[in-house]
Length: 115
Length: 112
Image (cartoon, rainbow over all chains, first blue to last red; front, side, top):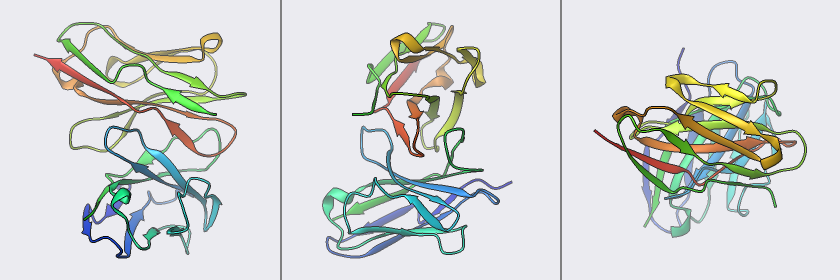
């Protein structure tokens, strides 16, 4: 079946603008994760959804970042008043269930560039 | 603080050389350990994982890793690398919470 998909693959925006990044998880996966990967670094956890609810949003850097998953499938990561430091690759992953014994399947990422 | 450390930032090997990439973590309690690989232009893919049982784990493409609890380590090995193994390798850990923590990654370049 299809893997995790993310759109757009690239997004260039200006400082101060609002952006939305979309993630389509693997069908049937209840858990969904967002990560941010800066150049030369490993992915950094942002938020984890179990179904429709955010089970852990401790990785969101500040209140400019917000994510939703209203129907328990597709998720949107929203960034308000973007800053140049937000430039990174935003990765989405999904798994059958959350918790300790999950294997996460990653999407190709969205490369965000804030000018 | 919980963390995952990968000691080598960039490793350069010739084909057929043996590979060992280091990974250490600092977590208390039960951990699950993973190695992911990212080939140029592709997304992260799981190489292997350790949940419990035999601490020597075999993954895809001839890779293996050994969990040494006393050393908090999960090093990745391959006896003979190929040019196609050129990629970035990430060690990751999950523990009592639901987030996965990654190391900074090791870039492997294999010269033909």
